[in-house]
Length: 134
Image (cartoon, rainbow, N blue to C red):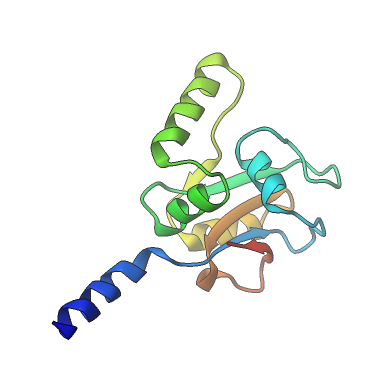
């Protein structure tokens, strides 16, 4: 019985990774959950300093994507699909560019002073600056 409980516990902990929201090191803006959410939901186009914000997302199906969508955007994958479908259809916005891996997001953010992205916290290196962890 103890083995089954232990095995079930190990299986269930996989989805609870910390998600780090990252920006270019030159970006000194302080960002809270609401401002990050507004940028990723196309409700804000710039950082508090006025620099244009270019959000970069991880592809659907990644654990960090599910965590970010739930903890920061307060939306499920289905809700986000409907949200972006409406904006695209009405010509009012495009979803953030989705990249395949944490490494690609870190590289894209490190190369663009206006970029903001999220990755598994374990994937962060000194080429980017963490503004929040969820």
